[in-house]
Length: 284
Image 1 (cartoon, rainbow, N blue to C red):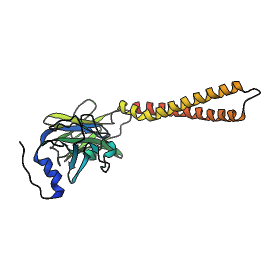
Image 2: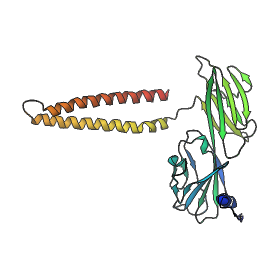
Image 3: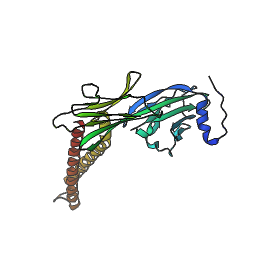
């Protein structure tokens, strides 16, 4: 059903347009640091994104993040936003501030799609013991009572106070858990957001390791490493060929270059050792 809505305040125009006609979207749940993909299901053809826009709103913050198929550089999220081939909005390395309602609208279409991004985060504060704070950022201003639950590494729900922990309870969309320092025990705690008896998302402490992201993060370093190796090999080949043509000794400039190459090789070895140590530390 299409509703006709008249807006006389220019500042409210965008909000009024997106309230006038809507297509039911979905609720997406992600953790801080994830990559989120928000699908666009607006009516009309999506063979091109040139006439498409994405609008963001949460609390008092509302703005266009994509217009005419182009990510607006003035958006605080611009560096982490992109469009897929089917015009879905991709948000890399999401933060709690990315939570909210995202509306996709295709030019010429009289309908739009709303996607609600919810972001869960678990972080510690230390004051003798460790207190874990689990927070859910969402478009809605509140969370249902007892919707943020804590479980241990066995999946057992934690309530009140027990062996080495104390549940501080939930206030709106924040729940806290105090954990005592225990040497020799590798304990893991998870915060779950439960709605309609279904776990929508959970976050862990210590956090899970994303090996694919670690691999991608090290790719630029590896490219530099391999480039340096290729340069050294080429220079050594050139020098050997030059030495074969020179009689009576080694030219001075070639000897100087060889000293420089030894320095480069040493740096490459150090770089490779650092990469291995970082990779080993992050996979533990």
